Amino acid sequence: MGRVEEIYLPEDGPTELGASISIADAEWAGQEARRADSQAGLVLWTDGSRDENVAVWYAVAWEKGRNWAGRKVHMAFFQEAYDAECAAIARALAVAAERAKRRKLGRVRIFTDAQAAITRMR
Image 1: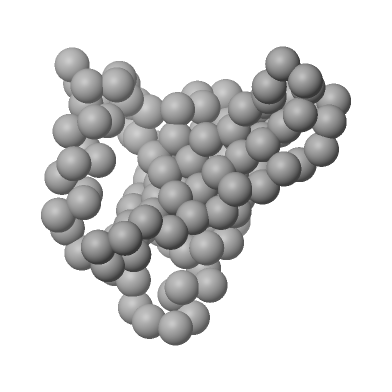
Image 2 (image 1 turned 45 degrees about the vertical axis):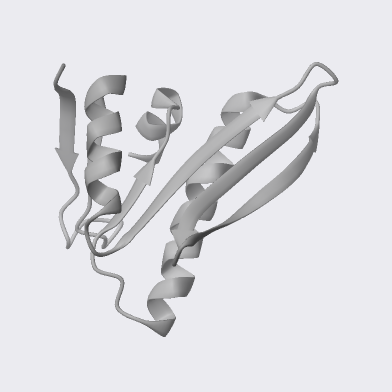
């Protein structure tokens, strides 16, 4: 168990996020997600997939008080699951940006299982 890689994006870099990307094994990520739930800030989970009918979907979910909120989006047909994974991460960032306009969020954490999409977002 352990972190595989952590990349820090400088605040004055092209993203202006002052963010870091952590690529981890499932056990470490699970522990981090449980710990993140108890910390202040916004925690989002993403997933994208393509079904047997070649329809492509993605979803973003987060806790809102004691309930769950989220977005599920049908992208179209004949796209790749990778496209959905990238779109899910982009939507999670958009959700965080929109919520940040209304109130200070603290730390924003996005959990995804799509390593290729994480690499692309880097």
